[in-house]
Each structure stands twice: as structure tokens, then as C-alpha cells.
Image (cartoon, rainbow, N blue to C red):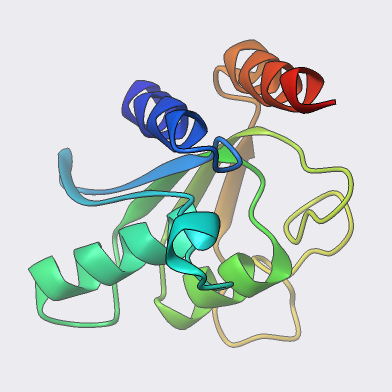
Length: 142
């Protein structure tokens, strides 16, 4: 999660919403991402999607069974769906996203009984650091 926080700070430095994500398999980081939607003009350039893309390229397979994704903010519905599609084993996130959360706050996409794969969800890891980063970012822009 500390590496995800570092990536979130990089995103903040680029005037992006400060979210960072890493994909870990067997204790090794194989994918990294930070929010990049503003810089790239790509609405799908969320930290989680970019980390999953890099991890899939490293693994040579879009299925990332056994992988854990660490992310500073609860994934949105798009990202939660990507976690299910990639067959990620576990999601660890820092703070909830009360406006757009697709895993706990608004929807429960990642571990829905309606889908063919369920992601194990762990929340609240380094939550205070993740919340502080997000609050500071938005406070400075108001």
C-alpha cells in the first residue's frame, strides 16, 4: 500500500486525482498505475486499470489469478468489473469512495454472487494516509 500511496502522490503532482495502485503476485509487484485520465484524455486511465494492464502484459495473460491489487481508494464500478474480469484474487484498498465506490460504498461488484468470480476484499489499510491525501488534494482546489 505504501507504493500505491507513492504513486498517488505522483498523480497529485500531475494534477490528477491522487489514486495509486499496484498488482502483486507472489510478493512481487508486476503492475503499477496512477490516475492519468486528465493527462491522457482517457476516461479509462484509472490507476487500477493501468496497473492491471501492466500486470497482464508482464504475466502474458489477462487472467491474473492469485494476484492482489492494492489501491488507495475504493475502485469505481468500471475498475471493480475489471478486477472480476481479470480474476484478481484479492483487493486491498485504503479509503472508501462514498460518491462512486463500486466495491462497498455504492455497489458490491467485486464480490457479487451474480458474477462468476468473486474478489476477496480487504479495506481500511493505511486509511488515514489515503483519506488525508485525498482531502488535501480537494481542499487545495476549492
